[in-house]
Image 1 (cartoon, helix red, strand yellow):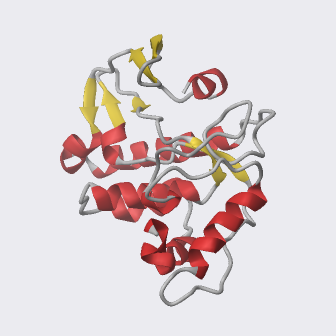
Image 2 (cartoon, rainbow, N blue to C red; image 1 turned 45 degrees about the vertical axis):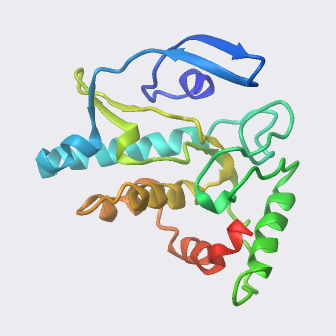
Length: 212
Protein backbone atom coordinates (compact mmCIF):
# COMPACT_ATOMS: atom_id res chain seq x y z
CA UNK A 1 0.00 0.00 0.00
CA UNK A 2 2.90 2.36 0.74
CA UNK A 3 4.26 1.61 -2.73
CA UNK A 4 0.91 2.60 -4.23
CA UNK A 5 0.72 5.79 -2.17
CA UNK A 6 4.22 6.79 -3.26
CA UNK A 7 3.79 6.18 -6.98
CA UNK A 8 0.12 6.73 -7.84
CA UNK A 9 -2.74 9.15 -7.20
CA UNK A 10 -4.98 6.39 -5.80
CA UNK A 11 -6.49 7.42 -2.44
CA UNK A 12 -5.48 4.76 0.10
CA UNK A 13 -5.46 4.90 3.91
CA UNK A 14 -2.38 6.26 5.67
CA UNK A 15 -0.49 3.69 7.71
CA UNK A 16 0.09 5.11 11.19
CA UNK A 17 1.97 2.24 12.77
CA UNK A 18 3.12 -1.36 12.31
CA UNK A 19 3.51 -3.70 15.27
CA UNK A 20 5.19 -7.08 14.81
CA UNK A 21 3.84 -9.82 17.07
CA UNK A 22 6.89 -12.04 17.25
CA UNK A 23 5.24 -14.90 19.13
CA UNK A 24 2.55 -15.34 16.48
CA UNK A 25 4.72 -14.16 13.56
CA UNK A 26 2.37 -11.56 12.13
CA UNK A 27 2.16 -7.78 11.87
CA UNK A 28 -0.63 -5.55 13.19
CA UNK A 29 -1.20 -2.44 11.09
CA UNK A 30 -2.84 0.68 12.47
CA UNK A 31 -4.15 2.82 9.65
CA UNK A 32 -6.37 5.76 8.84
CA UNK A 33 -10.13 5.26 9.00
CA UNK A 34 -11.77 6.35 5.75
CA UNK A 35 -15.15 7.92 6.38
CA UNK A 36 -17.64 7.03 3.70
CA UNK A 37 -19.71 4.15 2.33
CA UNK A 38 -18.72 0.89 0.73
CA UNK A 39 -19.67 0.82 -2.92
CA UNK A 40 -21.68 -2.32 -2.20
CA UNK A 41 -23.89 -0.26 0.13
CA UNK A 42 -24.67 2.59 -2.21
CA UNK A 43 -24.35 1.19 -5.76
CA UNK A 44 -28.06 0.61 -6.30
CA UNK A 45 -28.92 4.18 -5.28
CA UNK A 46 -26.40 5.89 -7.58
CA UNK A 47 -27.37 7.51 -10.86
CA UNK A 48 -26.06 6.06 -14.11
CA UNK A 49 -23.63 8.97 -14.53
CA UNK A 50 -22.34 8.61 -10.97
CA UNK A 51 -21.72 4.93 -11.60
CA UNK A 52 -19.93 5.71 -14.83
CA UNK A 53 -17.69 8.27 -13.10
CA UNK A 54 -16.72 5.67 -10.52
CA UNK A 55 -16.08 3.01 -13.17
CA UNK A 56 -13.73 5.20 -15.18
CA UNK A 57 -11.98 6.32 -12.00
CA UNK A 58 -11.38 2.66 -11.09
CA UNK A 59 -10.22 1.93 -14.63
CA UNK A 60 -7.55 4.60 -14.16
CA UNK A 61 -6.66 3.20 -10.72
CA UNK A 62 -6.06 -0.27 -12.19
CA UNK A 63 -3.74 1.13 -14.83
CA UNK A 64 -1.59 3.28 -12.55
CA UNK A 65 0.02 0.45 -10.51
CA UNK A 66 0.77 -1.36 -13.77
CA UNK A 67 3.27 1.38 -14.57
CA UNK A 68 5.23 0.99 -11.31
CA UNK A 69 8.65 -0.59 -11.79
CA UNK A 70 10.84 -1.80 -8.95
CA UNK A 71 13.86 -4.12 -8.72
CA UNK A 72 11.42 -6.97 -7.94
CA UNK A 73 8.87 -6.27 -10.69
CA UNK A 74 9.86 -9.52 -12.41
CA UNK A 75 9.22 -11.65 -9.30
CA UNK A 76 5.62 -12.94 -8.94
CA UNK A 77 3.85 -12.68 -5.60
CA UNK A 78 3.71 -10.12 -2.79
CA UNK A 79 6.26 -7.31 -3.30
CA UNK A 80 9.53 -7.85 -1.46
CA UNK A 81 13.28 -7.78 -1.85
CA UNK A 82 13.24 -11.59 -2.06
CA UNK A 83 10.56 -13.94 -3.49
CA UNK A 84 7.63 -14.12 -1.08
CA UNK A 85 5.21 -16.93 -0.26
CA UNK A 86 1.65 -16.28 -1.43
CA UNK A 87 -0.17 -16.84 1.85
CA UNK A 88 -3.45 -15.25 0.83
CA UNK A 89 -5.34 -14.58 -2.34
CA UNK A 90 -8.21 -15.70 -4.55
CA UNK A 91 -8.71 -19.49 -4.57
CA UNK A 92 -6.92 -19.99 -7.88
CA UNK A 93 -3.67 -19.30 -6.00
CA UNK A 94 -4.40 -22.52 -4.10
CA UNK A 95 -5.91 -23.75 -0.86
CA UNK A 96 -2.68 -23.23 1.09
CA UNK A 97 0.55 -21.27 0.79
CA UNK A 98 2.00 -21.20 -2.73
CA UNK A 99 5.47 -20.30 -3.89
CA UNK A 100 7.71 -18.53 -3.47
CA UNK A 101 8.09 -17.99 -7.21
CA UNK A 102 11.54 -16.68 -8.18
CA UNK A 103 10.44 -15.84 -11.73
CA UNK A 104 7.53 -15.85 -14.18
CA UNK A 105 8.47 -19.33 -15.45
CA UNK A 106 8.04 -20.84 -11.99
CA UNK A 107 4.57 -19.29 -11.67
CA UNK A 108 3.62 -20.75 -15.05
CA UNK A 109 5.00 -24.14 -13.98
CA UNK A 110 2.85 -24.03 -10.84
CA UNK A 111 -0.35 -23.40 -12.77
CA UNK A 112 0.50 -25.86 -15.53
CA UNK A 113 0.97 -28.46 -12.79
CA UNK A 114 -2.54 -27.71 -11.54
CA UNK A 115 -3.86 -28.02 -15.10
CA UNK A 116 -2.26 -31.45 -15.51
CA UNK A 117 -4.08 -32.67 -12.39
CA UNK A 118 -7.48 -31.36 -13.47
CA UNK A 119 -10.27 -33.80 -14.30
CA UNK A 120 -10.08 -34.02 -17.24
CA UNK A 121 -6.50 -32.73 -17.60
CA UNK A 122 -6.15 -29.37 -19.35
CA UNK A 123 -3.52 -29.36 -22.10
CA UNK A 124 -3.72 -25.66 -22.92
CA UNK A 125 -0.91 -23.88 -21.04
CA UNK A 126 -1.16 -21.05 -18.55
CA UNK A 127 -1.17 -17.67 -20.31
CA UNK A 128 2.11 -15.97 -19.44
CA UNK A 129 2.06 -13.72 -22.50
CA UNK A 130 0.89 -10.69 -20.52
CA UNK A 131 3.39 -8.72 -18.39
CA UNK A 132 3.76 -9.03 -14.65
CA UNK A 133 2.35 -5.92 -12.99
CA UNK A 134 1.32 -4.73 -9.55
CA UNK A 135 -2.31 -5.68 -8.94
CA UNK A 136 -4.74 -4.99 -6.10
CA UNK A 137 -6.12 -8.50 -6.68
CA UNK A 138 -9.27 -8.07 -4.58
CA UNK A 139 -11.19 -5.40 -6.42
CA UNK A 140 -14.56 -6.09 -4.83
CA UNK A 141 -17.25 -3.54 -4.09
CA UNK A 142 -16.60 -3.93 -0.35
CA UNK A 143 -13.02 -2.68 -0.87
CA UNK A 144 -14.10 0.46 -2.70
CA UNK A 145 -15.12 3.37 -0.47
CA UNK A 146 -16.99 6.42 -1.68
CA UNK A 147 -15.62 8.97 0.75
CA UNK A 148 -17.55 11.83 2.29
CA UNK A 149 -15.13 13.99 0.30
CA UNK A 150 -16.48 12.46 -2.93
CA UNK A 151 -13.27 10.63 -3.70
CA UNK A 152 -13.10 6.95 -4.63
CA UNK A 153 -10.83 5.10 -2.18
CA UNK A 154 -9.27 1.65 -2.53
CA UNK A 155 -8.74 -0.25 0.71
CA UNK A 156 -7.56 -3.73 1.76
CA UNK A 157 -4.40 -4.31 -0.26
CA UNK A 158 -3.73 -7.56 1.59
CA UNK A 159 -3.83 -9.67 -1.59
CA UNK A 160 -1.84 -7.21 -3.70
CA UNK A 161 1.14 -8.51 -5.60
CA UNK A 162 3.08 -8.80 -8.83
CA UNK A 163 1.01 -10.97 -11.15
CA UNK A 164 -0.04 -11.23 -14.82
CA UNK A 165 -2.20 -8.20 -15.55
CA UNK A 166 -5.23 -10.39 -16.21
CA UNK A 167 -5.25 -11.47 -12.54
CA UNK A 168 -6.91 -8.12 -11.73
CA UNK A 169 -9.86 -9.16 -13.86
CA UNK A 170 -10.12 -12.70 -12.48
CA UNK A 171 -9.69 -11.40 -8.92
CA UNK A 172 -12.50 -8.88 -9.40
CA UNK A 173 -14.76 -11.59 -10.77
CA UNK A 174 -13.99 -13.87 -7.84
CA UNK A 175 -14.77 -11.03 -5.42
CA UNK A 176 -18.12 -10.43 -7.14
CA UNK A 177 -18.94 -14.16 -6.97
CA UNK A 178 -17.89 -14.44 -3.34
CA UNK A 179 -19.92 -11.38 -2.34
CA UNK A 180 -22.92 -12.62 -4.36
CA UNK A 181 -23.06 -9.37 -6.31
CA UNK A 182 -25.93 -8.96 -8.75
CA UNK A 183 -26.84 -6.35 -11.32
CA UNK A 184 -24.80 -4.00 -13.47
CA UNK A 185 -21.50 -4.26 -11.56
CA UNK A 186 -20.73 -7.45 -13.49
CA UNK A 187 -21.03 -5.58 -16.78
CA UNK A 188 -18.40 -3.07 -15.75
CA UNK A 189 -15.65 -5.42 -14.50
CA UNK A 190 -14.19 -5.95 -18.02
CA UNK A 191 -14.17 -2.18 -18.54
CA UNK A 192 -12.35 -1.62 -15.25
CA UNK A 193 -9.77 -4.42 -15.40
CA UNK A 194 -9.74 -5.52 -19.04
CA UNK A 195 -11.75 -8.25 -20.79
CA UNK A 196 -9.80 -11.43 -20.07
CA UNK A 197 -12.58 -13.93 -20.70
CA UNK A 198 -10.33 -16.64 -22.16
CA UNK A 199 -7.96 -16.58 -19.20
CA UNK A 200 -10.84 -16.71 -16.73
CA UNK A 201 -12.28 -19.68 -18.62
CA UNK A 202 -8.92 -21.44 -18.34
CA UNK A 203 -8.89 -21.00 -14.55
CA UNK A 204 -12.40 -22.42 -14.34
CA UNK A 205 -11.34 -25.38 -16.49
CA UNK A 206 -8.65 -26.46 -14.01
CA UNK A 207 -11.33 -26.45 -11.31
CA UNK A 208 -10.76 -28.27 -8.06
CA UNK A 209 -7.23 -29.36 -8.95
CA UNK A 210 -6.35 -26.10 -7.19
CA UNK A 211 -7.21 -27.73 -3.86
CA UNK A 212 -5.26 -30.95 -4.36
